[in-house]
Image (cartoon, rainbow over all chains, first blue to last red; front, side, top):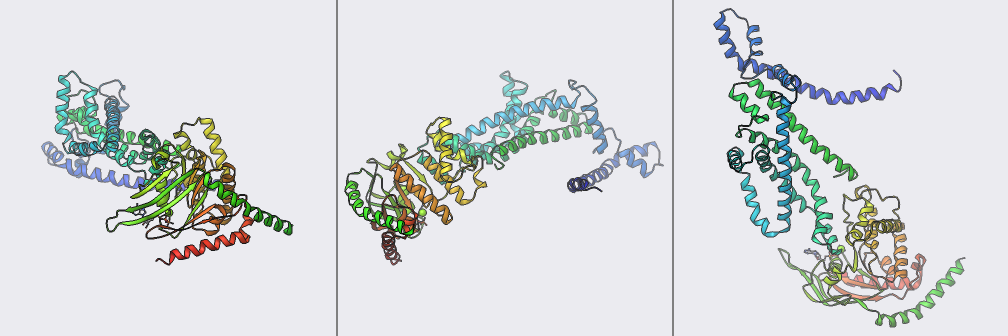
Length: 302
Length: 287
Ligand SMILES: Nc1ncnc2c1ncn2[C@@H]1O[C@H](COP(=O)(O)OP(=O)(O)OP(=O)(O)O)[C@@H](O)[C@H]1O
Ligand SMILES: [Mg+2]
C-alpha cells in the first residue's frame, strides 16, 4: 500500500460509516415488508390455492403472496416494477406516465407554495407592525387550521368551478391554504426576534420603520423562516394531492391515488405514494439548497 | 533623553496652569450640548420601583470630554440612554443641543457605542460599519472609504470580509466603535467601550480617541470603571453614587489637551486620580 492510498481508504471508510447503518435499516424494513406481505395476502392466496386443489406447499403460498395482481399489501419488488414501468417505460407526455402526473401535482404545489409564502409573509408583516391586526387576525389564522382540509377542499373546488376557475388555480389555493400557516407563524416570530439593543441601534440612527424592517427585522427573520418553509412546502404538496381528490381530476398524483383505490389497484396506489414521497424530498431539498446558499452568503452561519 | 522629557513635562505642566484658566473662561461661552436640570428616572419594576437617576444637574459644553465613573449599577448607562432618547426621564428637564433629546436623536446628532457590541451577525464587518452610512443615504464609494478608514483606526484592517462571530469580544467592541465614529457625529456617547480590551490595545485606542477629540473638537461622554483612563481622557470627570444614582462630584481636569501616555506619571495626573478615588470611596460608603 502506498502512502497516497491511505487517505483514500480512510475516505472510503468514512463513507462506509454512513452507508452501513442506512443500508442495514433499509434491509430490515424490506425484510419486514416482505413478511407483512405474506401475512396480509396469505388468506386470499390460500383460498385460491384451495380452489385449485388441496396439495399446495408453503412455498406456493409465499410466492403467491408476493405476486398477486391486487394484493392487500404489494411486495416491494412489485412496486419497483410498477414504478419502473410508469416512470421510465412510458413517454413523459403519456397520461399513463407517473412523471406526467407528478409534474401536474408539482406545478400545483409550487403555485400553492408561492401563494402561501406571499400570504404568510404579508400577514406576518401586518401582525408585527399593526397592533390591531395582531389581536384580530391571530385567532382567525389559528381557527383556519382547525378546519379539516378534506372538508373545505370540495367547497373551494365547487365555488371556484362555478366562477369558471378550474385546473391549477383551485388546487393552488387549497395548497396555499395549508402552507401559509407555518410561514406566518415562523415569520411573526422571526420579525420579532431582534433583541432590544439591535433595535435601539436603529433608533439612534433615527431609521424609518421601513429601514428597520429592511435592514434588521427581515434579515433576522430568515433564521426562523427556513424551518417554516420546509414544513410549508411539504404541506403544500399534501394540499395539492388532497385538492386532486374531489376535483375529479384526470391528472395528478391525487387522481392516480383515487383511481387506484376505485379499481383496487393497490400496486398503482403504492407507486403513487412512493412518487409523492420522492416529490416531498425533492421540494424540501430545494428549500434546503436555498438555505445553504444563503448561509454561504452570510459567511457560514444563518 | 530622560532630562529632556522631564523638562518637557515641566513645560507642559507650566503651560497647563495658564491654559486651564483660559479654557475655563472660554468654557462659559461654548454652547451647551447637554443640559440636565434635576433629572430623575424611576424604573417601575414588578416588585419595587428602582430609582436609577436622582436629581442630576449637569452641563456638558461643546468640546468637553466628560467621563462618568461610579460603581456598577449607579445609573451611568441609564444617564447615557436618557441623553440618547432611548429612555424617558421621570422628571426634570433635559436639553440636547438646545432642543429636546428626541429632536437630537432625529437629527442624528450623536453616535452611541453600547456596552455590548450589538453587531448584526449576518453582516460582514465592513457592512456592519456601513450600516448607519446606508441609513443616512451616503453614496456607496464614500461608505466603503469611510469603513476602511475607521476600521484601520481601530486596528482591524484586513477584517472587512469577516463576520462578527469570527472576531473576539474585544475586536467586536472595536468594530462597534468604528461604526459609531464612521458617520462622524459631533457628540459621541461611549459606554465602557474599552472594557473588554487588553491594556496595550486600550492604551492605543485611548491615544487615538484623545487625538481625534483634540483634532475634531467633538464632544464625548464616556463611561468607564478605570480611574486612570478617566483621568487620561477627560476634561471633566463626573463621579456618581448608586441607589439612587446621583452625581457626587464633578472634577475638572487641568491636564493639557495634548497629553500622552507618559503624562500618566506626572504629579498633576496622580493628584486628579487621587481626588477621583476619594470621591468614589465616599460613594461606596452609602452601601
Ligand atoms: N430596564 C430596566 N428596568 C428596571 N431597572 C433597570 C433597567 N435598566 C436599569 N435598571 C436599574 O437601574 C440601575 C442603574 O442601571 P445602569 O445600567 O444605568 O447601571 P450602570 O451604572 O450602567 O452599571 P454598570 O457599570 O454595571 O454598567 C440599576 O440598579 C438597574 O438595576
Ligand atoms: Mg452600564
